[in-house]
Length: 88
Image 1 (cartoon, rainbow, N blue to C red):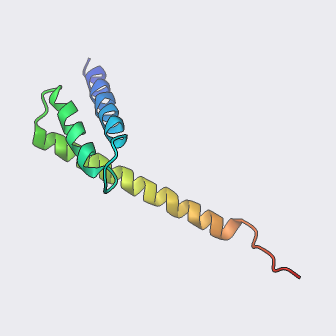
Image 2 (cartoon, rainbow, N blue to C red):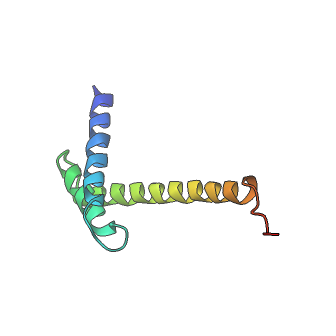
């Protein structure tokens, strides 16, 4: 039963974050994202400060993931695609 509650908690946190990312805001939706994730976690009895910590950690992990994948894609494009030829 505990695993089901954790899965539901994670689903609600991700859904709140996804909704918040659709709100047009400057700075990569940092304000609405953190606020809405913390508010959705209040539904599960998690305090607002802890909810903000979860949102910040989640946002940081996502940013790190995007950075690593982008760096790998850049390296792939730089080294594995054929070089363009000079016109004759």
